[in-house]
Image 1 (cartoon, rainbow, N blue to C red):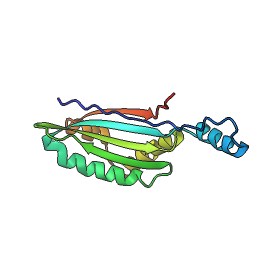
Image 2 (cartoon, one colour):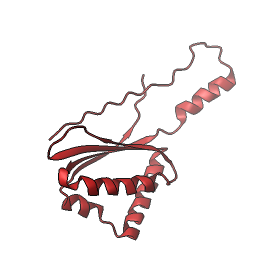
Image 3 (cartoon, rainbow, N blue to C red):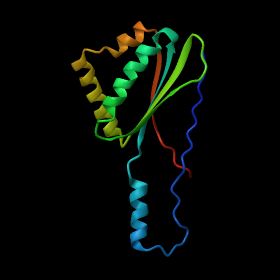
Image 4 (spheres, one colour):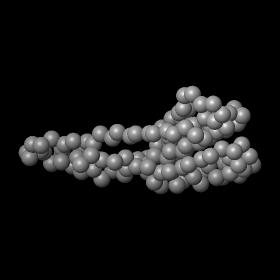
Length: 141
C-alpha cells in the first residue's frame, strides 16, 4: 500500500512590534486573533483499480453538493500518481467553523437519505479503505 504524507505549512499573522499602535489597529489585531479557526476535514481513500470510476463519480456528486452549503470555504481532491492495483485519493474540505462542519454533516446525511445512497455500503462493496479526520490550522508561536 502506498503511503501519503501531507504537510501543512501555516503562516501566522504577525503584528507590528511598534508599541504606539493606534486603538483602531489594536482592535483589528484582537478581532483577527479571536476569529474562529477554520476547520479542515481530510479524507484519505485507498481505492482498488476496478472501483476508481464509481468512486470518482460519487466524489464529484459529493463535492458539488457541499460547495453549496453554508460555511463552506473551499475543497480540493488529490490522486496519488502511479499506483498498480490500488490508488490513493485525498479530499480536503475547508469550513468556516466547527458549527459549519457539523451542519454540513447533517445536510449530507439528509441528502444521502433523500437519494437512497448508502455510503458505508458503497465503501464496503468496493473494498475501499477510508480514513477521516478533522484538522484546524496551527498558529506559529
